[in-house]
Length: 471
Image (cartoon, rainbow, N blue to C red; front, side):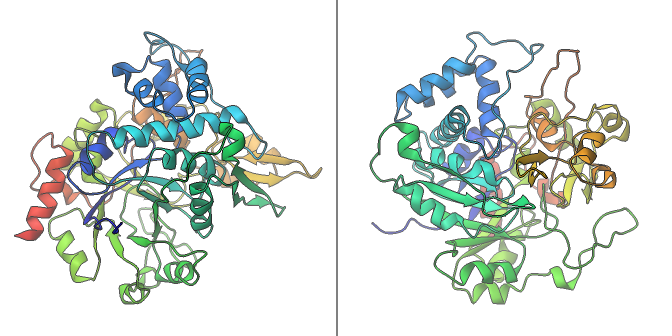
């Protein structure tokens, strides 16, 4: 069988839930690469089931899971017929950790299966799933679920995905698959999944998806391409203006007058060196604007990855009210997007769109009680007694300090997990009446709406970019 044609456009995998199955399916139906965000799909599935699964889409997907009893256990834990109501606290899901949890792995596998299954319905276009290397504990089970649903591509950024090729090889054969996990003060820890033990039997081999590594450096691209064991099938080369997380500047961090990181010549990617690696690549970050695709082709790229234009389209997973507010401010060139070096618990700069009523406002941020009840961005560390602990600089400062870190590391940190869930309408309502405020992110080059109709669709974005380039 010949290799499918490479897409010209990749729709960026924007989490949490912005790049959901509806958006990925709409893009893939045009023949371009639709991508679902694989970040925190366990909690989004659990919360949507507790909402009653409007439309029955998740239950339709779960009915096709290859081992029905696993899907039935997930439904039994979380599905609420008719929905639990917006003023009811969501039931928690098992948190990521090094200790084995069957319930956690089952939920992750089923959630990723459902999202990719729905994205692939009723068309034959390519569908991918995007993961963050920073969230190492989640990836083995999540990727397995996506592969069970037939994901065509896996995209991995926010780190060095050197072990992902082997992981995908093992998962395709239903072998036990493991990834190294960074634990401060200890070595040799891994996270993984045993598909046969989890599902009860070995299924027929799966198609191995192609891997695209999301990088911001030709040095990292060369490092990954050096060996068959680490080599991806291609690269997405991301510039610092792309939405969400971006790589920090190389060398000592320098901030400008607005408090944003300053990028210089050392941060520029030598595309000639990337091309010399012999692997296809796509350019991301500011290329979804007029002339962006032509510039990418001129630089030798296969095409471009576009996020923000899709984030504001009708099929986006963003809360509709927030999406309209973002769109109006962007269209009038009134939206400020700040590359905040302190906001993310990961330590990577993170783009925050400044919109009233969100945690971009200092008063909203200060009023939010600090807590870490989801924990996707927690890091692992070895306690003095040798046991493993978890900490996040967005948790209460005194708790973080008790775990051996200085208080200044927690200054200005936002809880991305809760804020991004609130941005897609799945924010937690707490027993004391407190509702999570949303956190919004977008790319810093906001000219992407030029030429798009009001209330545009994903197909409008594809046609706008492709037809504009062909002209």
